[in-house]
Length: 95
Image (cartoon, rainbow, N blue to C red; front, side, top):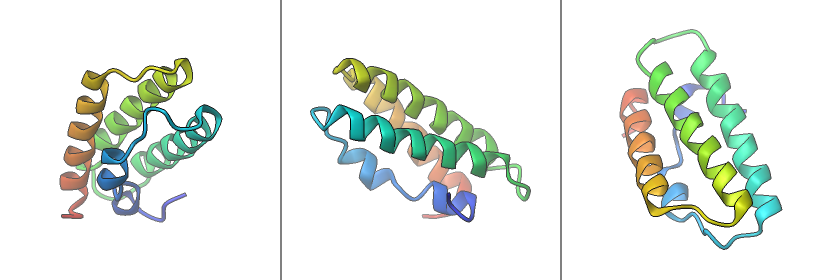
């Protein structure tokens, strides 16, 4: 788990590199860990500003996980995911 919301939001480059044809079981597992980390970071004390963006990013990752398990992640979902990742990154001050 990340030690801070800032660490949870470090990952837009990884999201850009997401391979829609990756091993489904590994992808699902990796996404599950990322979702849990983001939710934990969103629930931590400290600044209120990053909580909503981190929770939104976790929600988008959950949607990607569902779509990935069926073998199809729509481009619109990836665009929304990248948007939410950028918003979370900005809210956490990691840019």
